[in-house]
Length: 574
Image (cartoon, rainbow, N blue to C red):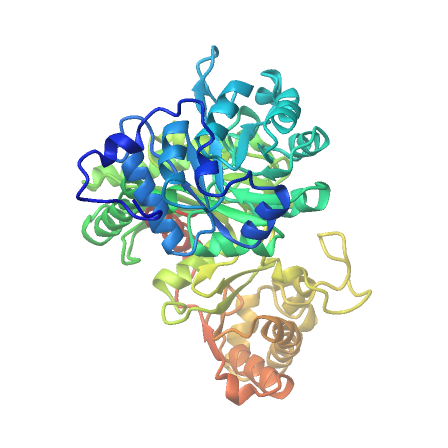
């Protein structure tokens, strides 16, 4: 039989592929010698390694089928294969000279699987045709003798050893013990890293910086963009498995996405929205089209501490549920918009502002989900407003836009490429705290000269010389032509235009959407800001920047919270 092809006319072919090894080194049939570390590096550098595996009981759990997956992956550009068990390695070796990383998964006495737990299991893989051996060198793997096993495999079998790890300290220890490569395979699959659910390019960067041996990215790499980001982070090569060789999982992802979108388009259940502000908490019941069926406002116990605030949210959530039930509705989810930066994936407040003392670290999502029994999505209030604009407001027609909220403070949210930008640590879009005036007025954040100090409600009152009691009065008198009110609005617009100039220069958005109490019914402000931007921004006409006032109104934060809940029900990303 020619190497690289199955003979479909040979009835004994599947049996031959699964034949026992009889203590022979199959690679000698094809290459005549073991693959050196140098040769492995040359063949795999900057390439894809396809992990061709199938769990016990899977319809593809057969060496012949695994081999065909390997052939397909190699035909598509993979440079190497990772395979589990001597039988699969042996079958793959009969059809290719490409490097094979062999592993042997064994259930240990603690009931969990360990990758290549003994020298003998590694020896069987090498006899079957593996060029390299991967072993578990996590903290658990080390308890089962992984560090000594690295030395034994290299000494007795003379093949490169790859260390599957989950944390940086494990990678460093493995490299010191003699591992030739470290792989991020078990990141998210150990007790210490179980909270990690997504591929982390930053972890690859950390490994590359700390480890003296090449780093291969593996684990939770689901898309070509994930693989690209792994290489950009400094990976030597990338291993991809489920996204290539698990048709059941691939089909499941498509099926779930289709069903979620169908449900979002066809189910008529409403969602609940709560906008937790430093002064007031706004509530509402919202349809999928952005109709506000019910709304109310209650004071926020802002300075009473975390537990009181959580109880406050639970009470408002139950009140909304009761009201929805009386309307004959069974709400599908609750969205919460809160001041402070929020880890939207966990529903936890990452860092709270001074207006909500004790709010940092509050597990809002978990607490409300447990209390209410429905899915809960939590987001920073300004980000939520931007999501509301994208779903229900002025942002629907744009993929790239900046939404700024102007009120007691200045917040914002940015959509880039059609997705909400949260930043690496969920601290992005702090638009009110970009520096506007060096050594200017003090800000609540501790710095001086922030945009917020010059473009919030207090600033507008200050520009009017304290001749008005509220910003609504200034806007009303400005609309009626009163000179001192108009001067205050124009001064405000000058500072706001200066701040927006920097944002537009950095992000080049399609639109700038202004919202909040200072913008409502304030066409003079919109026109004055546009005049500032026209004068300041190079190539302003070519940009065709749309400057819009938000149509969402006083309960825009509630609509935004509801939009966050709707979006979370459709998207797989937080």
